[in-house]
Image (spheres, rainbow, N blue to C red):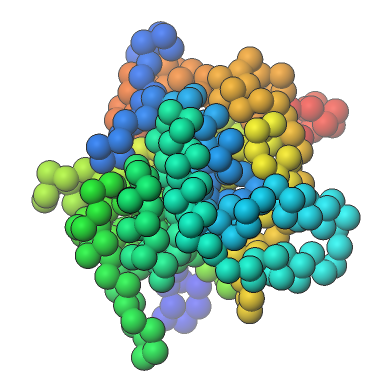
Amino acid sequence: MFFIGTDRQAKRAYGFDEIALVPSSVTVDIDDVDVSTRIGPVELKIPFLASAMDGVVDVKFSIALGKLGGLAVLNLDGVQTRYENPGEVIEKIRNVCRKKQKSSTEIIQKIYKEPVKEKLISQRITEIKKGGIRAAVSTIPKNAERYSKIAEEAGCNVFVIQSTVTTAKFISSKQEKVDLNKICSQLKMPVIIGNTVSYQGALELMETGCWGVLVGIGPGAACTTRGVLGIGVPQVTAIVDCAAARDLYFSKTKRYVSIIADGGMITGGDICKAFACGSDAAMIGSGFARAEESPGCGFHWGMATSHKNLPRGTGIYVGRSGKLKDILFGPAKTDDGTQNLVGALATSMGSLGAKNIKEMQKVEIIIAPEIKHEGKIMQKRQGVGMGK
């Protein structure tokens, strides 16, 4: 702890750029590395989830990622369930972002005023299931009880309850508390809840009966929560603290709740560090928004961009770097670490002597804030590599 003033202490927190992973005395052939993971009863061949953002996930993208071994999460509060033809609406949003109009947030807010049509919840889940893969959906806490019943009836496999900050304890003189314990106990499908960044917050969410906890407040490329609200914890510290809560909870209950790093991971290196800090899976937004299969076609906007009173997201252009398969499995055509994410993870694990995700969570970590720049002066001068 550090003193930031008289009688006021603050904890030092770390982000991905401030640490490095230390190779051990043993290396593992990458062909022998297992990158699979589990979230409750759901096994994933690759430990990647796609964020429930309208510029990232639609039915087509869900099927594409599912067939590659991951899991895409469809936003039940987004345009996919508000409009019969969401493609036309997304094109309007892309045009607004493309022109960088000052009124873009206002226009997006207007688009999201269209009410959710509950028949479309069932329809989208059915369309995903027809692709022969699992269906995962997300909604905000106040809609969770009602939408979860509709989703389960439609055959949904994973249900996500998500907001900027979600806690097991909620105090309000006007709103009725969402009973997370009740929802988790009544549903047959596994529930993931988020987002949180603290040890105690994660521990209390696990006690609701969920199978996964999303970790990350404000680190996403299209998120402005940290600037608007001033809240958040750098991802390294947030993941380590929440993973510690998971381990304590498991030691007491023998029930393993997965930690899912959500946001702030730009390169394969960031993803590798997230797993080393204790993550069981990684939820990717902007990295997948670059895929040719993404509905945003390279445009990406935050989940809370459409908030009617206090937007905490913005529209950005992340570009298009290739097919989803290339982004996940390569071969990489760029040198900035944004392609062949599975290959990067497997290679890093092999170099660190980790045969699986569990072993990856135990590798040695050092504080190294200059690790990205050491010896890289020529790359900086020529504008190559290092996330140019």
